[in-house]
Amino acid sequence: MMLARASLRPLRCAAKRSLAVDAAQLEDTAAQLLKRHGVAGVQAAVIDAGEVIPVNGGLADVASGTPVASTTLFQLASLSKPVAARRALTRFDADAAVNPLLAAHGSPWRIEGQDGWGDAVTVSHLIDHSALGLHYVPGVPESEPKPSSLELVSGRAEEWGYAAVECVKKPGSAFAYSGGGFLVLQHLLECALGPEKALAPCGGRFGYELDGAPTGESLVDFGFDVPEGQTHAVGYRDGGEVLGRLWFPPFAAGAMGTASGLGEWLCGLSKAHRDRGDGMHAVARLMLERRRDLGAGA
Image 1 (tube, rainbow, N blue to C red):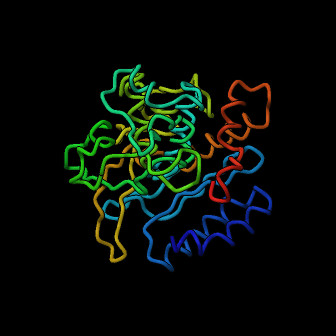
Image 2: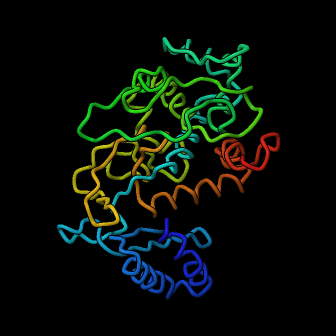
Image 3: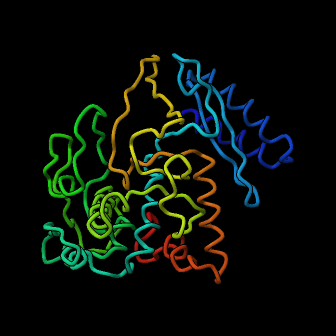
């Protein structure tokens, strides 16, 4: 976080100059900031007029001396959410009630809430943080068995900090950050498509038809195992101690990818939003245009 804040102004200034020197200037700035703040490595990307320019610095693995490259995988944390949202919105109507969808696709679990609120939760409410509880999602050590999406939503993974997901307010009434909505979204898609297809890598510029690209060629990968031939960055504490990888639910926080890959995906989202003739235009509008009824947080 300190690195991101400290580098924000230099990166913006450099991005205004010619692209011929931007990458070198940005990487020089990154190297200085890494040294100043004791950070092992960083990967970033600058999007300029639809072109994605990678910026890399430092080491992905200090012990082996492996440098950060444009292909080095990082955990995307909550940037997993918009990719998951796009996947869901190509398959379900945003205004469809979730409980009937769960029933139709064979899930034994339903969203519950006072005053019948659970039955009023729609796919849109899962995505726009306007109905369910569970703020951030906790991590599970990679050596431990990974809970299923059903266990996560139903409260059967409490040892890792996951209480049952419930509707905590009138759906659509207010914004309050909810990782729980994306647990339900993952469970719904897994019931509808099967886990393998629901969690298939995303391989294209926001395009539905490019989902399921072979692992290793994807822009965003919802798996946890590092594909053969690729490197995942190692995490470190402030004192340099290696921080073991944690598993997070894929849709809420657990996807992995690269800054350039995510940049390509965002370029596709932007294009789909601008181009009314794009097949994904309606989905892009749902994702990018603000829900005025939810206030400033949405």
